[in-house]
Length: 321
Image 1: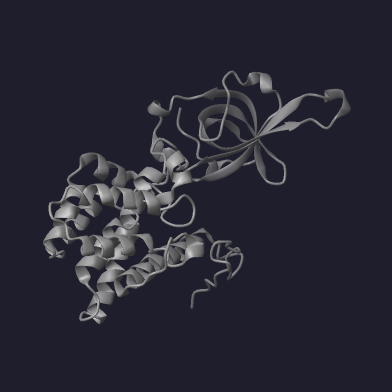
Image 2 (image 1 turned 60 degrees about the horizontal axis):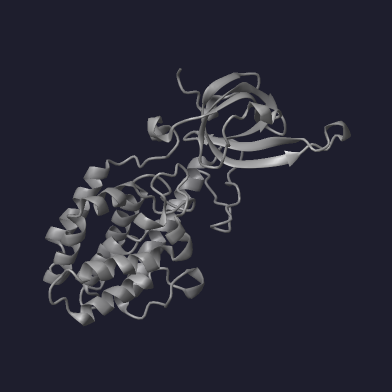
């Protein structure tokens, strides 16, 4: 059966389709004659959007339905403070047999093309032999490259899709290049570009690659991508013979300070010009991506202003001249 996209569902439609479970809440009935009984509220999603769901009779659930599951449902769309699917049948699906592109947003850019661009930077722009060997060592590891290409750059805030880490990394490289062009005598291009390529590599272990909603792994929750990234760096540097300790220290500092402020997750604040430049390149990529995402979601026919964004802490003016 053809997949019904959530964005196309209208009140009154019959529904037979696959959906991703984003949230589940088991709720007690308030009616006295149903005391002790429960129903289930859900938030369901696919690449096109989200919709509320409701299961009044929990007996139809043969296997536990949890956040992150993909399920097949039958029901109809009714109106309850917006569209809502009343579900009559539900079946849990094997995640290995599902077209993940229907449930996970994917970068519009080809991942192999983006990887090729990063490898070109490594071979043609990094002149320091130790840094080049370090980067070639990492990007010749098939498992590392596979995870790097599949990872998002974040769960919700920016570049939150498959290939997002690659796309974000290339944007950060671009901003770093521009800073080097302006301050060529003051910024060490090799250290900055290496930091740009590797600064978020801890995200390959921060996010669960099998999760449709980019859930955090236990290591991601307990350590975070900055600490994980330093671990990956330490292991890789140990494989490079005679890697200069001072160069390693500078690269470590660039990586652990790229969030810029301790309250934003950096163990330390930037104290070299390379670290400071990387922080702002990273911030520019993230913030502009947030602006673009908010603008693209906006319906300009209703207002010149977008909805309030809690991450940007503002609405955005989008009226075109």
